[in-house]
Each structure stands twice: as structure tokens, then as C-alpha cells.
Image (cartoon, rainbow, N blue to C red; front, side):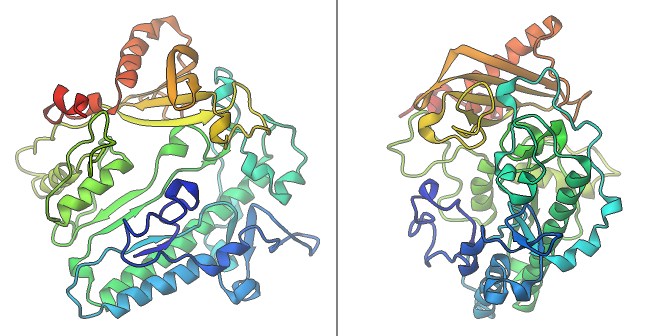
Length: 426
């Protein structure tokens, strides 16, 4: 069952949340989500606005509730109805917060006093950052409270005093969802499902909070493309709190869950170059070898070192732009498909982040027309504040990274998983 924002609503999920292919029940969407853009946020003068900073009293909201509270109720009811049942189930719960606007119960603000909120040290646009890479946070500028700041477009920063209020509300919204997740996992205990249920907690994107002078999610910076990824596996991860620095992607979720759940047929094959005629395939790989390695290393810390499995040498992301300079119309943060003229393709290795912004026509990149490049060394610059792409001493490194980027994701897989045949089959 799908509850809340699991697939992105609209055309990207065929206006159906991929039902009936992905779900045996019709997906649930909370009724109060229709009030997302309502003016319910309190201003200092007593008026109501459509703000980014929006702590609320729940009992004053339309329907006297909020979308994520509705989703929690439906998800908990789903589990309660299956108490005592041994029938396998898939329950996907998509909480909306901390998506924009930051509308959440006011009580969660107390966990994040304003004087404890810190902004990043570097919060101005880096001098070597190409304009095409800049994310002018147009979604925030549409909010009444940001519009009232009267900032010039596209580079004037949000003042620190208001940036701290935004970040405080972001933290409070995360705490709100953390509470709901805790209630949901507690329901697994109550209904007797916690000992045989795999739990995966992820986000769909990151969010900039003044890094590089940017806000929101419309970039290829790590703060925008990195997501939380927590996995609990009955019988394997109890008492095991481990983290891995291996390169993983959201496309790895599907094959991982298939293997962990021991579904019939096993992990689907990797998608060939042309997968239009393939019934089922995956562009990700199962994380089970990594998980097993981490668990084994925990149990053998004082014994022989556990070997690390061969793994990906790079992971990928991309973001579109309508032009080389930030614009309102067309919206350079959220360009319509017909307006996309440039695509930023990014490769992340263990040490480096490399991006090429290239001409894009309809649905194909023109690699012969490179508009801008970015190179960051995470060993020295984890915040991605210093673009090294124009420095001649890094030309050979960029040549290697460019070759890996253009070769695509298949060539960055563990060597034992890649063959020429499965890449070029059709």
C-alpha cells in the first residue's frame, strides 16, 4: 500500500502513482494536502500569509489536522488490521515534511532554540561557480515572507537573521517527522510485526541551507543530492549501529529489498542499453554484500580484518537548466521539459565531484558542446566551495573523470558485474 507522497504526484507517475502495477490498493493521499498553498502562516502583525517559515497550531488548521498526521493514521490502521497475520506486506509511507512550505506543529520549535541554530561558515556564491550551476531558490522567493525581504534576483543572499529562522523551522519539521516515524515503528512492535519487517528510511533529495548562498534543492551540490538512508533488517542489524562510506544510490533500493525479502525470481538483471523490450530490469545493484560486510566487521573488530567487497567507483546525478544564467521565466530551478537547453551531468567518486554542463536537445546530450565544468576535491573541500575546473594542474584528472562520466553508470559498477554483452544487448 502507498500512503502519502511515495511517487511524485502528477505526470512523473502517470497521474496514478503507478497503480495498479506497484500497489494492490488504491494509493492514499491526505485530503488536507489541498491546503498546501493556503495562507495559514502567522505574521508578526497578526495577518496570515503563505510563508516558508510556518509553525502552526494544528487545531486551527483546515480539518483540524495536517497531511502527515492523516498519513500516519492510515498507516497505523493498516498495520493494526494485519495484527496476527503472517501474510507478507509492503507499506510505503511518504511524509511530506520537511518539504516546502515548512508547515508543522508549533510545539516542535522548542527542541531547536534559535540561539542554537548555526549557519554554514561559507554562505556566499563561490567566485569560480559557473552561473549555470547557480540555484536561485525561486520556490522560496514565491513565499510571502521571503518576498517581503525585497531581495534582488538572483544573487542577493537571504539575511542571516532570517536564514536562521528558516533553518530552525527546517529542523523543527524534521523533528516532527522523526516523531511520526517513531510512532509508526512503535506500531510495528504493538502489532507483532517488528521481528519480521524490514524498515527502510530515506529522503528523496537534500536541501541547501545557505551553503554557497543557496537554498532549496535545485542543484548538483552534495547538500541537494545526498539523502538519509537507514536500513533495519530483522535478525541481522539488532544491536548494530554502523555506517558505510561506500558509494550508493537510490536505484539500489529495489534490488536490495528484493534480495533481503527473498522474493521469487531473485534480483532482476541489470538493464541493457535499450531496455524498452525488457519486462523487468534494474539500474541499481543489491547492497546486501555491503551490509553483510559491515555486520561481519562489527563482530570481528578484534579479529582478522574483514575483506571489503568490490564496489562502485562512481555514482551519478543530473540537473536541467533552460540557459546559462538564472531566470524567473523560464524558471531555471524548475524548467519545463520544452525549455531544457542544458543538462548538468555529475559524477561523484570517493574523493572527487565532477560536473559537465552540456548542451541538451530534446532528450539527448551533446557532449561536444560543454558549457561549463565543476571539480571539487572532497578530501580538502567537503563543502564544495572551491571549483578547481579552471586550474591547468587538474587537466589530466578531469580528463579521466570526464571519460568515466560520459561512459555512464554501467562502467562504474563492480568489475565482476559488468560485461560488454549486458551493456549492449537489446
